[in-house]
Image 1: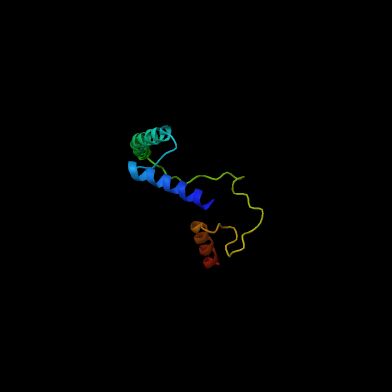
Image 2: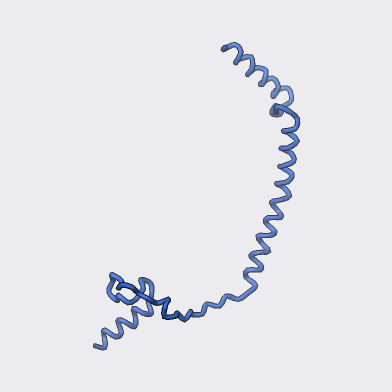
Amino acid sequence: LELVKITMFARAFQKTQSTGRRAFSSGAHAHHYKQWKTRTMYAIPVVGAIGVANVFIHFQHHHDHEEKVLMPYEKKMLKKYPWEPSECNLMDYECKEKFYEKTKKH
């Protein structure tokens, strides 16, 4: 059994040494390898060009960052927040400033 493994390895090694290339099981595999390599080389610039075009189109229009007016059903709070100005969101600094201004006046 050991001798069979050694001879199989030796034959595979001789095939790669004589041609200088990897020994595929048939020539069709080498053809598919070359075919997919060619497709990839053509696809990379196409995908890159589409990406650049998308970035260009994205930056063509103006982004308006207007404050959204909340409808009453969007500001609904079922319970208070666990921090000091309990009616303000965690990152709502304008609401917190208004709260602290009211507390300073009283």
